[in-house]
Length: 166
Image (cartoon, rainbow, N blue to C red; front, side, top):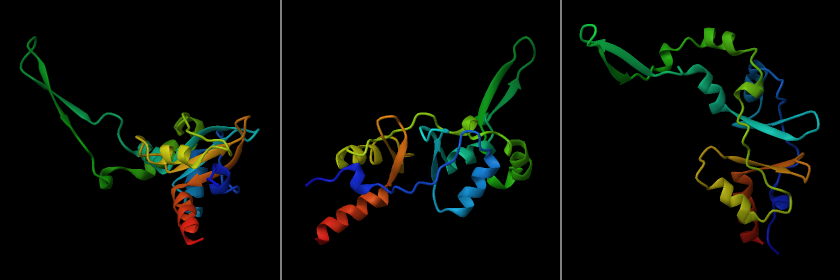
C-alpha cells in the first residue's frame, strides 16, 4: 500500500487570516516553532502563505543600488554599486512601527503549492524537493480549496522511517 497526503498530513493546522496585521503574525512566529503559516479566508480556503522570510523582506531596503553621478553636465553618467546594509544598520523599531498595521495580504505569497488528501507521496516529494527552496510545508486542501491539513518535510521523513521499522 502506497502513502498518500492523507497518511502524512497533520490535521491540526495553525493559520492566519489575510486581514491579520504583521504585528499579529510576528507574535504567532514567536509562539509557535513554524517558519510559515497558511493564510485562509473566512471559508477556510487557502489564499496564500506567510513565511518568516516574507517578514524579513519588510526590513530590507527595496533598492540596494547606489547611483553616483560622474562627469559634468551635460556629460553626466552614473556608476552603480550594490549596497548590502548589515542588519545592525537597519532601524528595526522604525520599520516595525511602519509595517505593524499592514495586512498579511500585502506581504503573503499568493501562489501556493497545494495537494489533495489523495495525492500520492511522490507529488508531495516533488513539491518539497523541487526548484523552489522556499517550500518547506505543503497545505492539503479538499476539492473546494479548504484547508484540511499540512505536510512538513519532517512528516515525510518520519513516515518513511516508520515504514522501514515495520
